[in-house]
Length: 376
Image 1 (cartoon, rainbow, N blue to C red):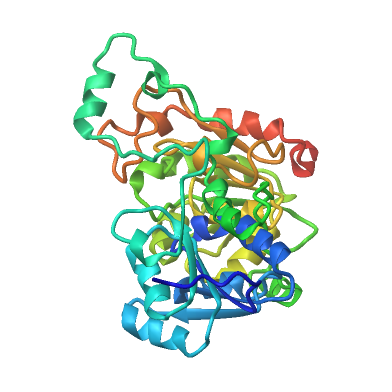
Image 2 (cartoon, rainbow, N blue to C red):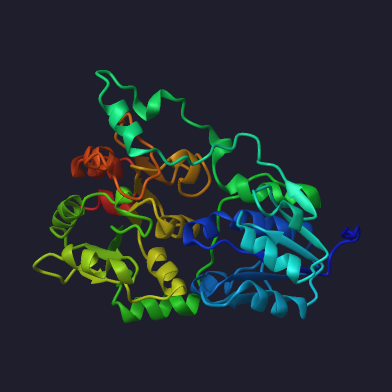
């Protein structure tokens, strides 16, 4: 049986999560961990694709990355040589627990999940208020939509603020004596990277820049229709004081380019052209970002940019931007019976997102007290 150290650790490993949005939502827990152990050396283990997110984070002393082809044993061998005292395992996966277990880290804290609890020294129960993200079967969706007066959201009450996923990570601080009160997710932007990004993409700070993130890596069920985004661009390019930044990953390049109007002078396509630090810098340049529920949405809010989010297959109560209730951020959704379904592909003609017209987005932006919105 493991002997769990009782003294404060000198070297802590945080096993990071694998999606950009989840990583941003985990930053309050990492900040609380640093608050609890101010003198410890904290390293964060993450997939290589997310390493840049943590490079300048004030709570992290070292970033350890691994690539998709690197197996559990190889990672564990590297970790074993670094002699960590404590591992805080943010993901629920068996692999993440195995890495710390085979690295022989004496104390391993993680959430309860099948196939891995025996590898942890501290098994943490789900936080009060947690709500599962249950994927609905297409047959369930067809059945609920066939009802003559189907209630919105499956007829179930909407979750409260305690259901937000930032609490999923904060709860892991409980057995360590850390504070679990929520903080806003926060990612800093390196001033040098900000300056270089402005210069590279000709982002003139005297102009009001509106960001658009039309993609969603998870799947098409999260994507507001491209024609709706095009309608917004058509409105904004009429104003010479505004500019538009189009964000996205390599898979979103064609989508972003399809939004460029015939006169592209006010539009910059950043999709597929940025590192994570440059993406954060580009989002920081915006007065507001209009986006689907996806990683860049969380990142924009975390760098301090207001966001307006179009929610369809997912739940803003669980994965909304920033801290729940933050008045800087807004979300829109169309009340339908089958949302949220948490599916990647919609079997019901995307009613939840097609029901949000561009005019409603423009009206909501007008309520957000943004400087550019009142400039004539």
